[in-house]
Amino acid sequence: MPATPHLLYPLCKHVLLGPALRLRLDLVVTGADKVPRHGPVIIAANHLAEIDSLVLPLAIRRRLSFFAKAEYFTAPDVRGLASRAFVSGTGQIPVDRSGDAAALDAAERVLDRGDVWAIYPEGTRSPDARLHRGHTGAMRVAARVPEAQVVPVALHGTAEVNPPGTRRVVPGRVTVQIGDPVDASTLLGPDRDVRTGTDRLMAAIRELGDLDYVDEYARR
Image (spheres, rainbow, N blue to C red):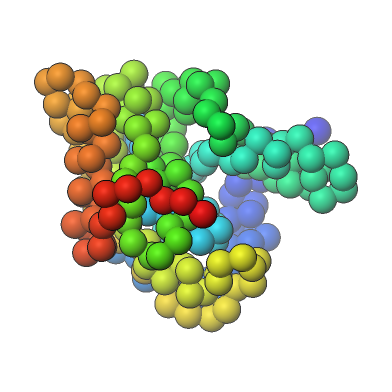
């Protein structure tokens, strides 16, 4: 049986992965105290590199649950068994890239427990370091849990330390800017429109990180 998230997540963060990663990176975090210490929270960040999902847990004190590709949970070989043990043991959420309503239900359950769900609204890594139009999944879940706080996050430098198409991590500076939390209901507005709420969320990420924005979905 894999270790529970309560054990494996802090073990990876503080012993197995985190210390080695901190030695490689000049990690600068601003606004860490803005993440609510209790209650349901959605962390919404831009996405530049695979390493983003290792950097965010170092920057944010609370345990994060991310979406993870479904094949990480199903690959049959030894490497697949290891990846399944890791993503399951750290409490990640399987998602089918073709669209998986069950994944949104799982994210809702994370928030209903009063925990933290982290998502990249762009849906994939940016191909050009610019912020792209957001998919509505984050706000669709937020609409179901209106008491959730949504925290915008801007990442810089991760594509440079983790070049696209590689698993290599080279020394360099990574910056994580954490913005003020916003009520989900404020982003959604009185009409509870998920498209409008998503556009407002992306605007908050863009302004926080002073990012160039492209009003089209990212494609890789």
